[in-house]
Amino acid sequence: MKIAIVCYPTFGGSGVVATELGIALAERGHEVHFITYKQPVRLDLISHNIHYHEVTVPDYPLFHYQPYELALSSKLVDMVKLYKIDLLHVHYAIPHAYAGYMAKQMLAEEGIYIPMVTTLHGTDITLVGSHPFYKPAVTFSINESDAVTSVSASLKEDTLRLFNITKEIDVVPNFIDVAKHAHTYTDCQRDLMAEKHERIITHISNLRPVKRVTDVIEIFDRIQKEIPSKLIIVGEGPEKELGEALCIKKGIQHKVMFLGNSSEIDKILCFSDLFLLPSEKESFGLAALEAMASGVPVISSNTGGLAEVNVDGVSGFLSDVGDVDTMAKQALHILRDDAVLLKFKQQAKEASKKFDTENIIPLYEEVYEKATKKVL
Ligand code: GMT
Image (cartoon, rainbow, N blue to C red; front, side, top):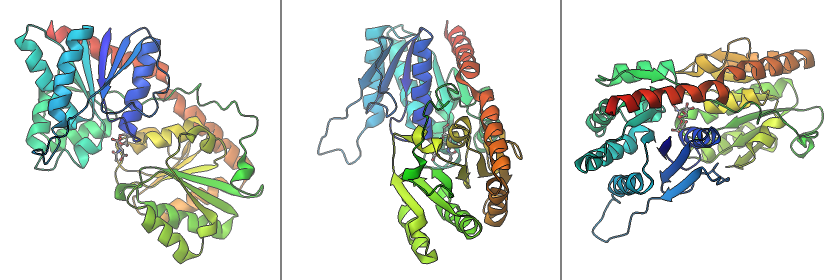
């Protein structure tokens, strides 16, 4: 099949999922066309089945806001015609489903009928999409999609609760190539980050308020009082300064490293003993799944889709949002004893296998078939 994938190309779960999906589909023989404003961050391998088409919005003094949807829908029309694309798969409803719908309509005028699959990722529904400024357009473009998928059952429930949806929503969970996450390193170089006797605790996110970075630091503070440890925080975002200030206030700044965005997540997870994700909201928690696939147990909140990923008492533990005391106790339970830590590491890796690429990509292919039948 010739598939056009529209996504946000920057750091962030939805872009990562869309990129990895495109790569996996290309490996299965599909021709994949990424259509977005910048080459996706994880797309460093352009194979003969993968194409990238950049959307540019020309600057014009009259534009107070750049009309990206307009440029995207025009680019979609051009690329569908040029490459005879069979299906549009848009990730993140805003504004991609809306631009996709416009492209579909323009193509229909020329007798070209193309199905559109929309994948909902979380903040497009729970944070931004349900805002009254966007809600009618988001509802409309979801209902006008030929197939809709959500990355967890919890996100499906949220979507049905927040919007008036008339379309069936298929749950297709996020996925990971478990084999790629099997470390081949003989030495993770953990001595670069910590002393031999110290545990390494990691948090990776876009450091937005929803990630509760200060909870990460509160949990770590309680851990480091009991056992020697270091905290690595990966990512850039608006809560970084607040996090740094809290570390200084607590006098633990020498034990906490803020690494910024990194393209070496696998190396960081290789030497991590525990992953913290105490988010306020999380439709899935791809970062938790990446940690688990690398054999890193997860202490997380029980919000949204996290309970569908992190298995309580097996791959880590789940607690109520904001309950940093319980999270710290659970972390200490895992970290105190070498044998317990090893058991949780193995269990985390095992639990991630349910979401292996091999199990999930065929579900997307089924959705594509279903959507194609609808427009034929
Ligand atoms: O977590 C974020 O703020 C980024 C956001 C995104 O759109 O990239 O992540 C959402 O999509 C990811 C991929 O499907 C999910 O793993 C995240 O849980 C989800 N984030 C939220 O729901 C807050």
